[in-house]
Length: 173
Image 1 (cartoon, rainbow, N blue to C red):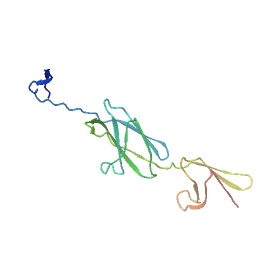
Image 2 (image 1 turned 90 degrees about the vertical axis):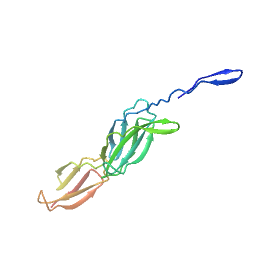
Image 3 (image 1 turned 45 degrees about the horizontal axis):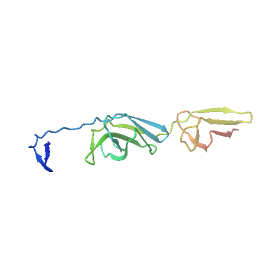
Image 4 (image 1 turned 90 degrees about the horizontal axis):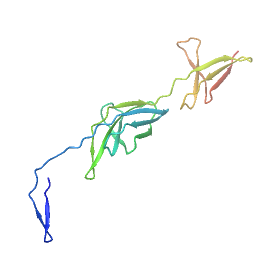
């Protein structure tokens, strides 16, 4: 509501008050993409919401509960490192400032990501001095590779070695 006034002889003379009206400012829930930029670094790219001052990012290890705030950003990106072999669920909401306090939109849809090591691929060759050379294609984030051998392609595998390189060789007799 409001009222008008006029200054007469340095004194304000007021009208009556207008009727009370209200307006509600609403924000849309943001949409976003969730990507892994390396083995355990995740980035949320937020699509801007008109009128928003910022975005609150929440994360959980449960699909629909126990979310906690991990960031409040004014930018349209948020990145963090995550643990291997754990699924994380994210949701975002936009906010505006009203009288010094945050007023929030609803939540975005929940999206998930899991950091895992890729299954290595390899090549197997025999060189001229009776060695088997095991060549592993590098797996991003891997610290090493364990080599297993069996005479049966489905069972009975035993560990024959480990390497932090992409090659392993073993003399055969």
